[in-house]
Amino acid sequence: MNGRWGYPAIAPFFVIFLIFGVAPVVYSVYISFYKWDPLGVSEFNGINNFTFLLQDSDFWIALRNTFSIWALSTFPQLAMALGFAWILRNRRLKGKSFWRTILLVPNITSVIAITIVFQQLFGRDYGIINSLIQLIPGVERIDFVEGTLSSHIQIATMITWRWLGYNTLIFLASMLAIPDELYESASVDGASRWQQFVFVTLPQLKNTITFVLIVGTIGGLQVFAEPQQLGADGGSTKQFLTLTLFLYNQAFLNNKYGYAAAVGIAITIIVLIISTINFFITRRIASESSS
Amino acid sequence: MRLKKRTKVPRWQRTSFLNYLMLSLITFLSVFPFYWMFVVSSNTDAEISKSPPSLVPGPRFMEVVHKVLTAEGVYFTQALINTFLVGISIAIAQVIFSAIAGFAFAKLDFRGRKFSILFIIATMMLPSQLGVVPLFIMVNKLHLVNTLNALIVPALVTAFGVFWMRQIIDAQIPNELLEAASIDGASVPRVFWSIVLPSIRASAFVLGLFAFLAAWNDYLWPTIVLQSPEKFTLQVALTQLKPLYGLDYALQMGGAFLATAPLLILFIFVGKRLVSGVMDGAVKG
Image (cartoon, one colour):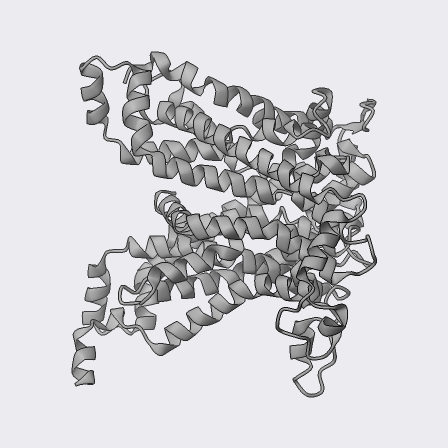
């Protein structure tokens, strides 16, 4: 259609997008080469922010924690989401609409509210989870927040709880788009349900799995509210300091804007690396299982 | 008899008791934390701290609500209003701007269209923390710090919203329909208003809902740009309840329940549409 209206139509979007979406990205690269504080006093600092970052043990701890929380919240969730989507895709399932809707409930809730509930559920002294753990003979109460792995499990549980249903629906949509004939012919060839899942469903879902993994990686590197609510400094031994919490504390507690901008750039590089790896791995797995 | 009936169903379409058991389990786990907010906020601390803890609601709920609403230095009612205003403004703005720009990117021929779309997609891969520090510096220079506009203005329209609307319009509206209208002499704005808008109503509503929910639940950005308690959104106000009286679970959970209840009520009416929104987005994305 006539393009004369094109520019006026995209203008409002483009102005906002350039000012609040693109400019901060460019500006952030600039700031990362400066010593910059809230008063705006700036001094060129070369690549010092970056060399200091690589020597900052807190950065490496935050990287480790973020990666651990990401892995703990991504892979079990992915497996469960595929499983539930596999159940829900069945045409003969009763109450389809009900199950789908209820699965999405956790996703709409306030992240701070959820952190409060899970903190209570995982509590050392009065938490239900510890009450359940104690039913196992000989097992002590776990102080989830104090341990490194246990605090990661607690945070990963909150993330999984919130996103499992959402990702299940994404997988379900892709599974429903797979033509029935593929299953019918696999069934005629004598494939078991498990074989059908591995050889028919998974290869067809490779793009969706890549998509979910990439979105999950971007989300995983943004984990902030949960650890901040467990302990603003990331825990007594920084056991749950995440990259975004580290960035926030450098910028808004220590007033080191330049340094924080460098952290932001490091996070972006990590996202790009992991996204690329994800892309190639899923492509490879999918092409192997389909051959 | 039963065996005969089962063989009629193709093997790959069978459901079993186990399926329903798993679904019931996940339903329980999805709903339990909400129920638990209510249980803890309506019981005395003694009821909750005993082992095993009380699993049924107690009589104290209204008392805790009163305590949340009157907590010193916390403007919970104001925070509810602020959050609502921010959410509604962002939702309406995003729907309007995304629909118009999405339409242009899907159906209008102008120079630089393809390049712009690729550019938008590329920026969607960037994590939002990258821009947080410079965005704060900019918002500060614009004198927006500690105003609700600091939340609204940067979120008036997003790359995601425009891209999403573009996909929907591209998929749902045939070019022939638009061409026919334009041969009949309808102007582009007229075509947008009377053909495009009516056919994307459902999707636009879902986009608005997602924008509203995202604004309601946002925490990182509000906690950076809002400074005085009467400007806080619910998420920030909730964090104020924590250190107030030492560890008071009932108070915190009461606040959490109050901050979540509006979303749950909203969900009863729009849950199904959100589900189809998520699933539609998945197939195209």
